[in-house]
Length: 118
Length: 108
Image (cartoon, rainbow over the protein chains, first blue to last red):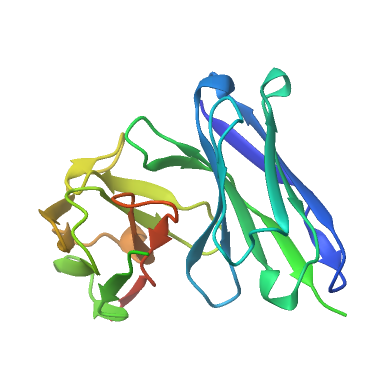
């Protein structure tokens, strides 16, 4: 069974940093591309970042570019999201998601809540 | 950036009725469209990919159609567990991946 478990969320002040983790199991993690997607309170889903299977290609939307860094450790079946210079508008539930063979997001974690507030 | 516009924003129906949800892309994306179901407190669930292909384990009452710029998710006969928010998502031209704003399917 494919399983994705996020952790690392919490309450931080604007301008601070936070690192999210996602541990994968039930599949060969090193062969799949991965994403982070978030949902702000009362809002829809927003794509946050992408990383290739080998970790050599990364993409971000303009809203987080330069502040967020996605990375992975294939030896530990782990995906991370380093979030710096956090803003109130980054408050959201953050999901890690696996990209399937035809680029759909076929498995998602339960999410971890990040709250940015003074 | 491709913009996806979903309609209606909210759809009020009763169990047993047919639901038709629309997603329109701002540019031609071929059939590179997926549909997801999302319930509060749960992980989003992939329903349909490549516009028409049901994901593993998805009941046959869910079907997708369309190509180019106009897409439809149809639920043939609503079950109580189908009431949720539904999102479309494109991979026709990325990055960025983009989602529609969602359609809330509520019980009438």
